[in-house]
Every structure is written in structure tokens, then in C-alpha cells.
Amino acid sequence: MPVVRDLRVLLRLRDFRSLLAVRLLSQAADGVYQVALATYVVFSPEKQTSPAAIASAMAVLLLPYSVIGPFAGVLLDRWRRRQVFLFGNLLRAFLACVTGILIVAQVPDWLFYASALSVTAVNRFVLAGLSASLPRVVGPGQLVTANALSPTAGTLAATAGGGLAFLVRVLAPDADAVVVLLGAALYLAAALASLRLAVGLLGPDHDPEHRYPSVPEGVALTVRGMAEGLRHLAGRREAAQALAAMTLMRFCYGALFVMLLMLCRYAWSDREADGLALLGLAVGVSGAGFFAAAVVTPPMAARLGTRGWITACAAGAAVLVPALGLFFTPGPLLAAAFILGLATQGAKIATDTEVQSRVDDDFRGRVFSVYDVLFNVAFVGAAAVSALVLPPDGKSAVLIVAVSLLYAAIATALARGGGRFAGGASAP
Image (cartoon, rainbow, N blue to C red; front, top):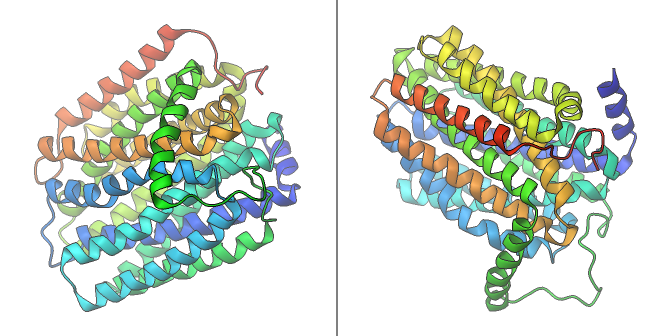
């Protein structure tokens, strides 16, 4: 198969393998840590969770460090990306240990959220740096396949890490702190893996005398840099359109994720452990959809172009989400989780390729940080809308129909735009 052949070529590249190892370990740690936080907030027996509580938790964890996103981009275009991976993961390992201690100490919620926020804030630098570094370790003609393998493999690693966290939590219901410490160990492993990469390999290329900006300089550079990055993106219509479509699809995914949380917590089980097991199964099925997207996206993007593939993903979700979701039973919704995993990850691979192909290297850090900010704001916005619509048990036909219509609107807008993005026969 051409996909298998292309993957073999990529995996022969030593620097690509090293960068991939950093991504896998780092995102596996993210999966462990995020599940530990979610189960502590949503599935702890002493907590009575509501959609509003979930939305509040997401806002606390996501919105503040979304503000850091633009700052991360400006600094990533000045700092050695390899050093960001090394020191960023070391810092996250330490801060995750602090979070574990706070869970054991049963501190007030605001202090726990502050600690969790500090870990996820550093995450912005690492994830944006991983995306911006990929073109430095593969050739231009390998970007589509690399984007199919690398981010998707990272997502699968996060899913595997989350599955491991689910397993530990189900076997030991009071082991939240242990799960967090497991995440800390994986962050440490990611930091050590980054040492296999040369310091200057991943860029950006700067004069050796370049100094780090001070805090006031960093603020000024952020404002100016973001304006420059947005102007750069505005001049690349195809990349901007792909990014807008992906942001809206992320909103849809977030709304359905909150609904799934509530269904697992209240509608499908009487015990927290059973609901947690169901949620873990749903996450695993969605991860299988991510894997399927990695296999089918390169040939589909070559055939349809990235615009055509994103359109197909949105259109498929528009049809299948209501067809499967309106039953409000585990079987059809697990099938919907697979479809959404495939559609969302397939569209993301195409969007990543489009942005990397169209955006100049000097602006990639800033643009991918904007990408992250849009992702987080869309997810939190979806949680807020879900809090207004969802009943306590999570069953809402209105939400499913509205999400389906939004998917359909995305597909229609892209189809009317015409043309092909990168990823076809003339893909860079």
C-alpha cells in the first residue's frame, strides 16, 4: 500500500523518529493528566456534576492559557524549539507532582485549578512547537504523510495514556494522585527523549547573538507579532479558510463531548465507576477513528485536495451524527464517536498540512499558536452552549440537530468556495 510505503520512508528518518518520540511521550502524559483531572472533577463520588460545572471547569482550564497562546507563538519564533521541549516537559513534570500533592491534601478547588492551569499553560508551548518543527525534519513532499502520522500518532498516544489513566482509576477509585504522578513520569521521559535532537535542528534560525526578550519586550513583541501573523495568514486565503472550518468542527466536537460526559455520568449508569468505564470505552473508540483517519487521509487528500477532504468529513458528520446520536443509547453513540474521531482528525490532518504549506517558517509558531487559541475557545464555547441546552441526564435532541446543521453549513460553505487546497497531485 502507498500509505505503508510512505510511512516506512518517514520512519527511516532519524530526526523524524526522535521528534515523534517526544510527541508520543508528551501527549501520552497529556492524556494521563487530562483524564486524571476530568475524573477528579466529574466522577468523584462526592461531586454532583452538572453541565454548568463541566463548562466552568473547562473555562478555568482552557480560557486563561488560551491567552498565553499568542505569547507562546512569538516566543517560539525566537527560542530554540528543542529547548522548549526539554525544559517545558521538565517543568510540567514538576508541576504535575505539585498537583498530585494538592489532590492528596484536599485543598480548595481554586488552588487545585491554579496548579492544573500551570501545567496546561506550558502545554501551549510544547504542542505549538511540535507542529512548527515538523517541516524541519521531513521534506516538503512528505508533509501530508507526516501530518497523517505524527499528530495522529500523538492523539493516539494521548488516547492510550487516557486509557491507562481510566484503567488505574477504575481499579483504584481513590487513586487520582497516583494517576497524576504517572503523568509526571511520562513528562520526564519526554524531556529526556528530546535530548536526542540537536539543539539547533528544529529552528528557528537566528543569529547566535540573539537574546531572549524581557517581559515588557515580550508583551510588545506579542502585540506586534500577532498583528504580523494575522496579516500573513490573511494573505493566504486557503489556509485561513481551512483554519476557520476546523475551528467550527472543534466547536461541534466539544458540544458532543460534554453531552457524552453527562450521558456516561448519569443516563447510562448508576455508579461512578460504571460511567467512567463507559467514557473510557468511548474515548478508545474515538481513538480508533483517529487511527482510521491517519490511514485514509493521505490518499483521500491526494484525490480530493484538502478542501475536498475537509468538506467530505464535515458532510459525513452532518449525516451520521443525528442518524446515530438520536437513539441516546451506548451502541449507536459509540459508533458516532468513531465517525467523529475519523472526521475530526481527518480534517485536522488536512488543515495542519494546509497551514504548514502556506505559512512561512518565520510565522509558523505564531500561526499555530493562534490555531491552538481558536481550538480552546471553540471547545469552551461549546461547553458553555451545552450547559444552556443540556438537561441533567445529557439527553438533548436539540443539541444533536443543531450540531448536525453546523456540520452541514461547514460542508456547504467549503463546497461553494470551489478549488483545491494543497494535498492533491500538486501538493507541496
